[in-house]
Image (cartoon, one colour):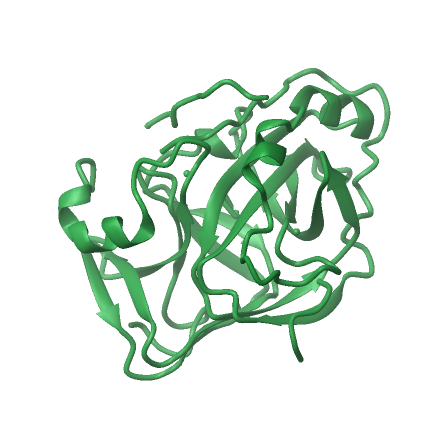
Length: 275
C-alpha cells in the first residue's frame, strides 16, 4: 500500500534532565496543568482505530502532540498521542509534515481549554527514522493547520510535566500495536545499555532551534554523549538484513536520551532480532 491516510512557545530546555512515545535538545512542551471541569473530548479518539501502512518514511519531519488526562478506569495519568505523519494526506514529497511556522504557532493553552485535557505537550519536531510503518490510526485533528492523527496512548506515570520532561535514559511504556521496519542497507543509530539491551533510535530530535543535522550527529558518534549511564555504549550500524519491530504484547518500551532523541527497545518480544 502506498503512502495513505493514517499524525508560540518559548524555548524550554529538557529536564535532565515520550513515548517520549512515547519519544527529546530544543523542546517546547508548554504543558498546562489546570484541572478540566468536563470529560476530555479526546477520550474516544482511539476507538475504532484502523490499520494503515506508510512507506518511504525515513527522515520524514514530524511532530507528536500529547494530550494528557486521567484514565477513566484507573485514574492514572495517560496521554493520547497524535502524529503528523500518519494522516489522510500521506507523506508529502518534501517529507515535511510539520512546517516550522505552524509548529511555532501552536497554542497549548488553547488546546487544553478546547479539548478539556489536563495538559498538552510537544514532541519534536523530529525526523522519523524507520523506512516504513504500519500503525493503527484513529481520529484526525487539526492543530494550527497541522493535521495529526491519533496513534497511541502513553502511560505518563508520575510525570505531570509532559513528555519533554521525561528523564533521559529512563524507559517508558506505550500502548502500541504498530509495526516498524528498517530496510537492509539502512544505517541505524543504537544504544547498548549496561544490562545488555539494545535500543534503536526511532526519532531524531530537531526541535525548533536545531543544534545539528542528523548527518552531523551520526558522524560525531559517541562523542555527542555527555550523560550516558555507566556501561552504556553508542554505535552506528548499517543493517545487513531487514529489521522489523512489532510489540507482541501491544506494549512497546521507549526511551529518550539526553537530546530527546527517542529509542525503541529491541530484541525478543519486540523485534525479529537484536541489531
